[in-house]
Length: 172
Image (tube, helix red, strand yellow):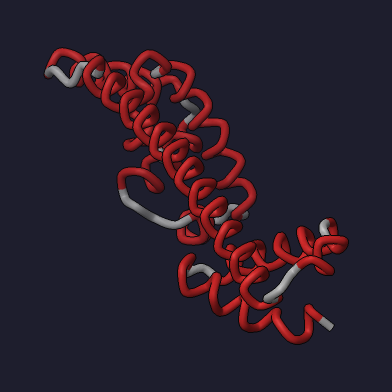
């Protein structure tokens, strides 16, 4: 009976302060859990409405504290991730010398590919053609194009491993 009479009012009260339906539902569920556990105290309560809203208020305060802790933890993780990205960027060498080395490796890797694999790669990456277009133009299946690209990309990733942060944008 208490649930039917008070649920909606307590929910609206919690929602007003928490501004989140799921959090408000959690709070009201906790309130009724508390009432169930302390049902003996119901006999001592002079003003049931006041008692229930007091419990709801306290549960809202706990929920707000919990949300603050979760957000603080999330912010710490986001900041750590940004620090890692910053450190990686600081260490990244983008000098012309490095780009020259990368170009030499790409050129020598292209030369080492079979003519068919090289042509498929060039059409995909340099001519920006889709797998379907390549298969139609070369008269091969899309699966053959995909398999060749997969093997070729593995070869490039292996040969360019020290430069992957820079090169991944060129090959994918």
